[in-house]
Length: 330
Image (cartoon, rainbow, N blue to C red; front, top):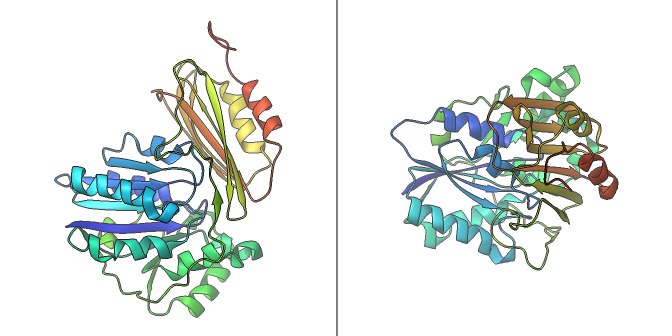
């Protein structure tokens, strides 16, 4: 049986950073796998985790439990039966509802395969100050599903967010465990905590997304003749636009970072080719984190998410202007 953990949390709470930390500190003699789901189709998290050493399956373009659970079943079955990992980490989209996923993992058909351990829910305490999120059904239900609540980004907290966290925990912890960390640096031993939060979660009343009719079960890719491609997605009160560029396309470093920092959106995430190699971009609200390496990814991928419609064409026009010239650029 594969020890399995659901690692959930709203947009920007630090799920991918936490998983990256866990993979870097896993036992050397164990094979780990990650089933990652993203709201958009571009596959940013897959690109971020590609060199982690873990077996990886992506489910793009909405919730892994949509389409009667087919995308999740395909990815889950492939990892369990072909990969036979010692541990499986499941990262749903930050806009996903946990009930359908937990229902599937505890179904009789998976009982011989899955040893379901604690569900970890990442929380940026500053989110508790946003009335919009407090009213968000998925935000509330993700926290309700947690066996362990990880109050992440302690280094970004202020007096107001600390007070909000303390007040929320005093009213909602209900015997569950909560810890405070920075940059997702949790003790891997937490993964072996047992499930004890067996409360019944309501089904989401607003569980809907719009998917392209041709949506597949893999992240977006380019045809051999394409230099770049755009993808749009919407649902759960949010809208996403993502781009993928071929391996020959590089971007002006300073211009790209300014574009990502100033874009009038809630969320920006990407892995992009620049003259120096690659830059990983992660922005949530005003929090802006970048990491550069002198190795280049096979392509460039970037996605933006916002709680309202945006002028995607203008954002795209500004992004395309940042491409550096090459012999084939157009």
